[in-house]
Amino acid sequence: MRSSSIPTVSGPTRLRLPDLLRITDQAADAVLRGRYNHLLPSGDIPTQERRFTRLHSDDEVDVWLISWVPDHATELHDHGGSLGALTLLSGALDEFRWDGNRLRRRRLDAGDQAGFPLGWVHDVTWAPAEQAPALSVHAYSPPLTAMSYYEVTEHNTLRRVRTGLADAPAGHMTSRINEKLHVARARLRRLHAREVPAAVRRGAVLLDIRPESQRETEGAVPGALVIERNVLEWRCDPTSEARLPQAVDDDVEWVVLCSQGYTSSLAAASLRDLGLHRATDVVGGYRSMAEAGVLEQLNAALLRSVWYPRHQHGEED
Ligand SMILES: [Fe+2]
Image (tube, rainbow, N blue to C red):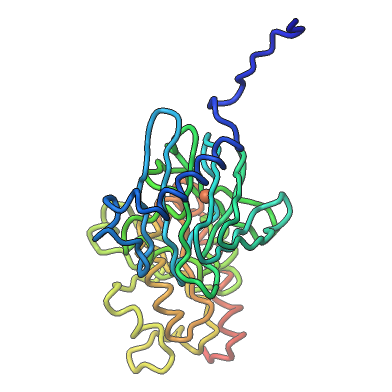
């Protein structure tokens, strides 16, 4: 006799992690037997580029074949309201999971499986192995619809950066420019809008690279130097004849900002390429600074910065 009226289905899906593990196992087997060759480019398993191929989709579950290659950065993410699982067919992957205090790494080798309960936040990357590339089959139930992305803060906490609709799992980058952006951002310690006034007080130089039309529409940033994107590197490089007076050495903290914080990441990465190792940008750009109400604080911050950094650098007035 049933003693409880607690429903046996309490989650967002009828399926459980063991079901998803079994589904990925069976799909991996089918991939190896060539059953999905018609979905793969020229019938082959992709080996040269990161690729997502949807093997199956219904109301309950979607199943993906993912190929992994080196040097493709991803981001910490959750899977929204979906459970997930993977089976690794070949190669190796590193999973970095947030355990509440820090990122824990585990290595997955060919044949290994992993399940992702609700609330699981992780990043998965290609790992060196004799047998490359890495190929994995993933299942999500209910099918992925939205995912959130995170970064670890300087206080060792997790900060949600954004939430977006997901059309592909586990890395979720469907264009080369997105890949490039993620690689660029992985090199930066980006500033959030509220951190900008403090950065200016300690001597950071704000660079507004928005085009003139955008500056006119949106408004100016107090204290920022307006530098058009096409001359940025020449102005910041301390060895360039066209440098700014502020470009005294490689230790200047250049903080690039644009309208929404996309092209500024690429620009900051380009400054890093020049050896300007403190270059970074502002998450969300001008718009987040306006929303966070920090533009007004910049004048005061700037007044204090005029003296300290210049004397620190030994400049003569
Ligand atoms: Fe994932």
